[in-house]
Image (tube, one colour):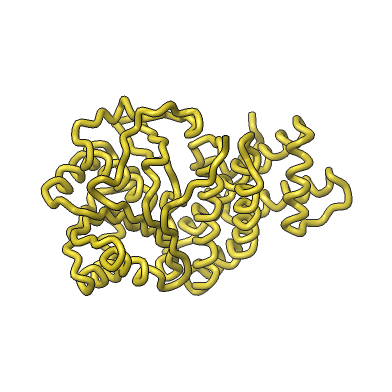
Length: 337
């Protein structure tokens, strides 16, 4: 059995944050918000628009911003304790993927304080292979995810990763998926090329993984095609112009979410970071070893209107496109060993 699961509400386009937050009071009757963000975003005032809207809507709120890089288990436990004292009926994750991953586990521990995180973690397990045991979430707090350009599709993802010393705890369950995701183009303006490259290439890896998955369907394929189209069209301009291309930033952020939806609904490897330099060679090897994969990549090349008369030529065109995007972001394409 396959499925297509997304947040209950998914807002997109520039300026949609205000409308989405209106629903918290008008539709869901929420009164107290616990905001989770990363330290850098907090210091740079990323939350100003969010906090102003909450204040004008009469929603009492407080902010937890002790997230620096990947969320660690101590910070998450601290956040859950602060949430328990504040007793929010909505948790808003804002900013980077680390902040959103932290918020997912903070809600888990806020609603189930005695949770054994090591027992629940599904390190490197595929989400479709996980066998129950995850508590039902949402009894106390609605979860809203508001990403910036570094959100890495966590706003539409049933995954969360936190550090535990030198180890990583990986959680995989659809209970972790936010109830509402807000992909607002006004919040997608990158500060540097590294942010843009990370967004574009991680999205590309997710899309290709989802497309090559044994559980890919016509539904996820459609998301993959639109995601790669968006990445191919807008990543070059945003790499060159950054925040001076707000339309490109908006569309790149949307492509990230679209790729994330496909990735969240297929059997995929959880790890994405650092995979982009090998992606072209992964596709080459997959096409060489599997006739079905080769035919699918040729069809993907057709959907992207890439050149090539024969199947091999079209597959090569797609591989070359991946290589071009990786090089554009300042990385070297590498061979798999």
